[in-house]
Length: 352
Image (tube, rainbow, N blue to C red):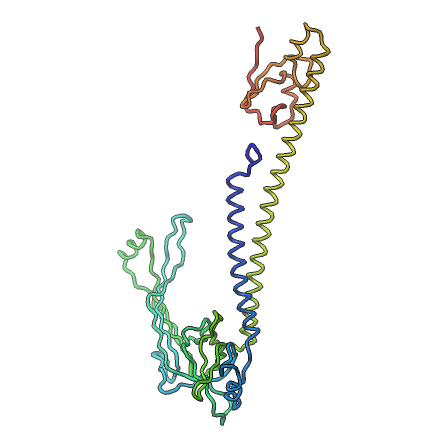
């Protein structure tokens, strides 16, 4: 705490940082909590023969936020895996990811680093159909790539290590980057896979569509069942809530520490001011009672013992208020009896 009771720059930075982090974490927590509440309020719709009649009776022939589960079925053609035989799907994602070691000049360590250098996603139209045979109903899934949880399965994965010559190794050490290799991955949404869709369910021209919901709600196409999806969202909400509470407590603790320091500093200033007033009042009383020839010696008396003469200057405050014996008797760390500032040097006085 600086002179005058003001918080230090480090305390301001700490308080500001914890406040900003707390606000950011709380904002994320509120967003996650809103998404979780919207999922809880989603209407579960059974994929059966009565689906169209349910939608036809709904306002606007749609359910704004519905949960429906079914098996994936392609409308026309399917996508074949490039690496696995007899593996067919409706969504295919091919990814090339580069892995390398990067030299950190701060920690002087090699750190793993990866980045996607190429990614391509292929899709074909598909429906969700009941698992039971003989039920003639299907839900067309629109804009599947807009979903936040696309349940793709990794069907192929291979790492291709980089081949380096001695010259390459020397060059990589000099540049601070050491390539490790390329990872090739293929993910697919297979035909027949179980998919849980959460979105807007619409009946249009005797066909049912599942599409991204309006009003900013999340669109899901997950390989998990709805209960598992909801449980995962609630776990995420609890995690962000704990983080927000921890940093909120840190912010409150920092603020309490700063306010307490200011309060103690103010109390100390009031106490010193009262002591100075009492001393001046006592000195004035002594001067009024003393004889004229003794008044000059009282003005030069030590403020601590009032018997010896002032014989030293305290630095850096510059007060002349104590004798050498009383200065030596001051407790450590030694502070000026007048202003309570730390004494860094003492200069003796010599009266001629």
